[in-house]
Image (cartoon, rainbow, N blue to C red; front, side, top):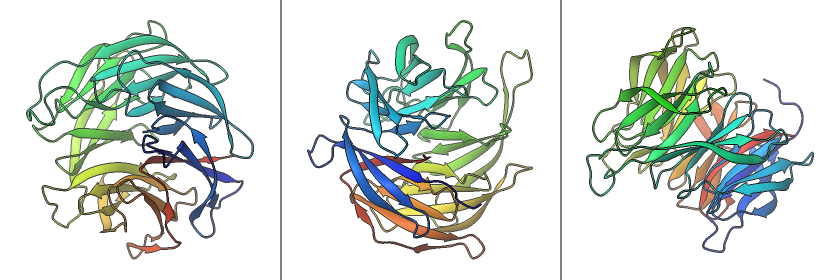
Length: 354
């Protein structure tokens, strides 16, 4: 896939140390496969950033709730507004397919918050909020609900929420008629597996669920027939996030990213500090391991895939670096292609075409 246009990367960081402002803006160099620092924007502890579906607005978690920014033609950010979420700070954001709503996952208080989005992309009022209930299995970590990922299903009728505290993925009915989260089903996961993050394939037929503590990805078929009260979800495969190499108890799966063409999935692991590449069969949805290699950084918290699908950036939280690699899909190798970039406690990265 040839790259056209200009791309900018936004990296969210914790700002409480005073070494980072919150969001660092980078120009993306597609030929060298690296980032060049452009500027910074003040956000209190930007733990997660996303772009709107139309790529015109950037949203960030902040101490005060959510902050929205208009993405300028040069990639700069113009603050639109900030809105409180009536709870503890979130850890994950997503919008629905039409950019009508934004969903906030509450790790600390086990809460899902749904807010309306205005036409200009600014964040509106809360339309619904739900607290998960229940006790997990490990008092130190999983004593109570921790919602880590919430997003709408591709058909737009349901909202799914992974809760790594109580080892469940809850399934809610939600639409723009009643704007209410109504629990209709759930995926019960193994005790201590900690379902952390999930994505759907672009065709909406397959669901990929990553477990932080179990260090695996479960692949599910997904179908929502018109008029059905619950979607049909069936597990069809389980693969380790660490590939064929053995993972230790100190390894935790941290991120899952698709290439733009949906042909490959990258998953990163903290502990053994690795990235694993899987090839995805478009017809069956099944995954086939291509490689699992070191990422040259500590705690790779996110993997950003360049628009050409040939380069990745590893967002290394603990070492305070971003490392860059070129991917050879045929041989299953990654090669460092640029010098690493220093950034304080980075959490996540999103690449936007401007």
